[in-house]
Length: 178
Image (cartoon, rainbow, N blue to C red; front, side, top):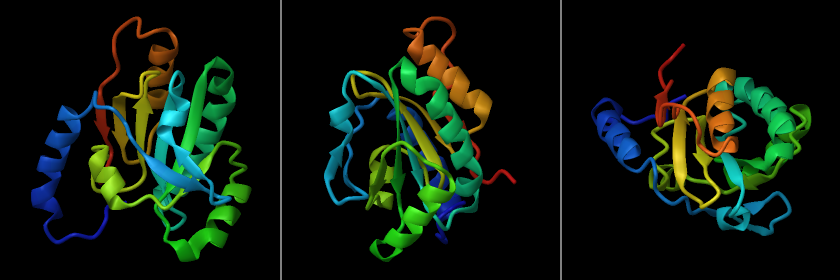
Protein backbone atom coordinates (compact mmCIF):
# COMPACT_ATOMS: atom_id res chain seq x y z
CA UNK A 1 0.00 0.00 0.00
CA UNK A 2 1.55 3.28 -1.11
CA UNK A 3 1.29 6.52 0.73
CA UNK A 4 -0.69 9.10 -1.23
CA UNK A 5 1.62 11.47 -3.07
CA UNK A 6 0.98 13.20 -6.35
CA UNK A 7 4.67 13.03 -7.23
CA UNK A 8 5.07 9.37 -6.27
CA UNK A 9 5.75 8.22 -9.84
CA UNK A 10 8.63 10.65 -10.11
CA UNK A 11 9.88 10.04 -6.58
CA UNK A 12 9.84 6.23 -6.63
CA UNK A 13 12.91 5.73 -8.87
CA UNK A 14 14.89 8.12 -6.66
CA UNK A 15 13.74 6.36 -3.48
CA UNK A 16 14.65 2.96 -4.92
CA UNK A 17 18.08 4.24 -5.94
CA UNK A 18 18.66 5.63 -2.46
CA UNK A 19 17.36 2.38 -0.95
CA UNK A 20 19.78 0.25 -2.95
CA UNK A 21 22.68 2.56 -2.14
CA UNK A 22 21.89 2.46 1.57
CA UNK A 23 21.34 -1.32 1.66
CA UNK A 24 24.32 -1.96 3.89
CA UNK A 25 23.89 1.12 6.10
CA UNK A 26 23.67 1.09 9.87
CA UNK A 27 20.11 0.88 11.12
CA UNK A 28 19.21 3.33 13.86
CA UNK A 29 15.71 3.49 15.25
CA UNK A 30 14.35 4.52 18.63
CA UNK A 31 10.62 4.30 19.38
CA UNK A 32 8.41 3.24 22.30
CA UNK A 33 6.93 -0.16 23.02
CA UNK A 34 3.24 -0.67 23.79
CA UNK A 35 3.87 0.12 27.47
CA UNK A 36 5.51 3.45 26.64
CA UNK A 37 9.06 2.30 27.37
CA UNK A 38 11.85 3.52 25.06
CA UNK A 39 13.00 0.77 22.68
CA UNK A 40 16.04 1.00 20.42
CA UNK A 41 17.31 -1.15 17.61
CA UNK A 42 20.77 -0.87 19.17
CA UNK A 43 19.43 -2.91 22.11
CA UNK A 44 19.51 -5.95 19.80
CA UNK A 45 23.15 -5.60 18.75
CA UNK A 46 24.63 -9.07 18.42
CA UNK A 47 21.37 -10.51 17.07
CA UNK A 48 19.85 -10.73 13.63
CA UNK A 49 16.74 -8.53 13.49
CA UNK A 50 13.75 -8.60 11.18
CA UNK A 51 12.34 -5.07 11.39
CA UNK A 52 8.86 -4.81 9.91
CA UNK A 53 7.03 -1.53 9.37
CA UNK A 54 3.25 -1.89 9.33
CA UNK A 55 -0.07 -0.27 10.30
CA UNK A 56 -3.50 -1.51 11.35
CA UNK A 57 -5.11 0.23 8.36
CA UNK A 58 -2.78 -1.48 5.85
CA UNK A 59 -4.45 -4.41 4.06
CA UNK A 60 -1.20 -6.09 2.92
CA UNK A 61 0.13 -5.77 6.48
CA UNK A 62 -2.83 -7.82 7.73
CA UNK A 63 -2.03 -10.51 5.16
CA UNK A 64 1.69 -10.46 5.94
CA UNK A 65 1.65 -10.54 9.76
CA UNK A 66 0.76 -14.26 10.11
CA UNK A 67 3.84 -15.07 7.99
CA UNK A 68 6.04 -13.05 10.33
CA UNK A 69 4.48 -14.69 13.40
CA UNK A 70 5.23 -18.16 11.99
CA UNK A 71 8.77 -17.20 10.96
CA UNK A 72 9.45 -15.82 14.43
CA UNK A 73 8.47 -19.18 15.93
CA UNK A 74 10.90 -20.93 13.59
CA UNK A 75 13.86 -18.54 13.84
CA UNK A 76 13.75 -17.10 17.37
CA UNK A 77 15.66 -20.10 18.71
CA UNK A 78 18.37 -19.40 16.15
CA UNK A 79 19.23 -15.92 17.38
CA UNK A 80 16.73 -13.95 15.28
CA UNK A 81 14.60 -11.20 16.80
CA UNK A 82 11.47 -9.86 15.11
CA UNK A 83 10.29 -6.30 15.77
CA UNK A 84 7.17 -4.70 14.30
CA UNK A 85 7.13 -0.88 14.16
CA UNK A 86 3.65 0.60 13.72
CA UNK A 87 3.01 3.73 11.69
CA UNK A 88 -0.43 4.17 13.25
CA UNK A 89 -1.07 7.52 14.89
CA UNK A 90 -1.30 7.97 18.66
CA UNK A 91 -5.09 7.67 18.64
CA UNK A 92 -4.85 4.11 17.31
CA UNK A 93 -3.21 2.56 20.41
CA UNK A 94 -6.32 0.44 21.10
CA UNK A 95 -6.45 -0.72 17.48
CA UNK A 96 -2.82 -1.77 17.66
CA UNK A 97 -3.49 -3.87 20.76
CA UNK A 98 -6.47 -5.54 19.06
CA UNK A 99 -4.41 -6.23 15.92
CA UNK A 100 -1.57 -7.75 17.97
CA UNK A 101 -4.03 -9.93 19.88
CA UNK A 102 -5.91 -11.06 16.75
CA UNK A 103 -2.69 -12.04 15.00
CA UNK A 104 -1.15 -13.56 18.16
CA UNK A 105 1.99 -11.49 17.77
CA UNK A 106 4.49 -12.48 20.44
CA UNK A 107 7.41 -10.30 19.39
CA UNK A 108 8.04 -6.66 20.31
CA UNK A 109 5.66 -4.06 18.91
CA UNK A 110 6.93 -0.53 18.72
CA UNK A 111 4.73 2.52 18.16
CA UNK A 112 5.31 5.99 16.83
CA UNK A 113 7.14 5.12 13.62
CA UNK A 114 6.87 7.74 10.88
CA UNK A 115 7.51 8.09 7.18
CA UNK A 116 10.74 9.87 8.21
CA UNK A 117 11.87 6.59 9.81
CA UNK A 118 11.06 4.76 6.58
CA UNK A 119 13.00 7.34 4.57
CA UNK A 120 16.02 7.28 6.89
CA UNK A 121 16.22 3.48 6.60
CA UNK A 122 15.61 3.48 2.84
CA UNK A 123 12.36 1.56 3.16
CA UNK A 124 10.48 3.07 0.23
CA UNK A 125 7.18 4.93 -0.05
CA UNK A 126 4.70 2.38 1.31
CA UNK A 127 3.73 -0.36 3.71
CA UNK A 128 4.50 -2.99 4.64
CA UNK A 129 8.29 -2.76 4.51
CA UNK A 130 10.80 -5.14 6.07
CA UNK A 131 14.49 -4.67 6.82
CA UNK A 132 16.90 -7.48 7.64
CA UNK A 133 19.52 -6.26 10.10
CA UNK A 134 22.73 -8.19 10.84
CA UNK A 135 24.41 -8.65 14.22
CA UNK A 136 26.45 -5.46 13.76
CA UNK A 137 23.30 -3.37 13.21
CA UNK A 138 23.64 -3.02 9.43
CA UNK A 139 20.70 -3.33 7.07
CA UNK A 140 21.69 -6.11 4.68
CA UNK A 141 18.41 -6.57 2.80
CA UNK A 142 15.02 -4.92 2.34
CA UNK A 143 11.65 -6.06 1.08
CA UNK A 144 9.33 -3.24 0.06
CA UNK A 145 5.73 -4.36 0.13
CA UNK A 146 4.46 -7.69 1.41
CA UNK A 147 7.31 -10.11 2.15
CA UNK A 148 6.77 -13.64 0.88
CA UNK A 149 7.60 -16.77 2.87
CA UNK A 150 10.42 -17.74 0.48
CA UNK A 151 11.99 -14.28 0.77
CA UNK A 152 11.94 -14.47 4.56
CA UNK A 153 13.50 -17.92 4.57
CA UNK A 154 16.20 -17.08 2.01
CA UNK A 155 17.40 -14.01 3.86
CA UNK A 156 17.17 -15.48 7.34
CA UNK A 157 18.83 -18.77 6.39
CA UNK A 158 21.66 -16.84 4.73
CA UNK A 159 22.17 -14.68 7.83
CA UNK A 160 21.83 -17.53 10.33
CA UNK A 161 24.36 -19.62 8.36
CA UNK A 162 26.91 -16.83 8.68
CA UNK A 163 26.30 -15.45 5.18
CA UNK A 164 27.44 -18.61 3.45
CA UNK A 165 26.17 -19.38 -0.02
CA UNK A 166 24.72 -16.99 -2.53
CA UNK A 167 23.46 -13.74 -1.06
CA UNK A 168 19.75 -13.16 -1.68
CA UNK A 169 18.76 -9.96 -3.48
CA UNK A 170 19.51 -6.92 -1.35
CA UNK A 171 16.31 -5.19 -2.47
CA UNK A 172 12.98 -6.74 -3.42
CA UNK A 173 10.18 -4.38 -4.43
CA UNK A 174 6.58 -5.60 -4.35
CA UNK A 175 5.04 -2.15 -4.04
CA UNK A 176 2.30 -1.94 -6.59
CA UNK A 177 1.87 -5.74 -6.85
CA UNK A 178 -1.71 -6.87 -6.75
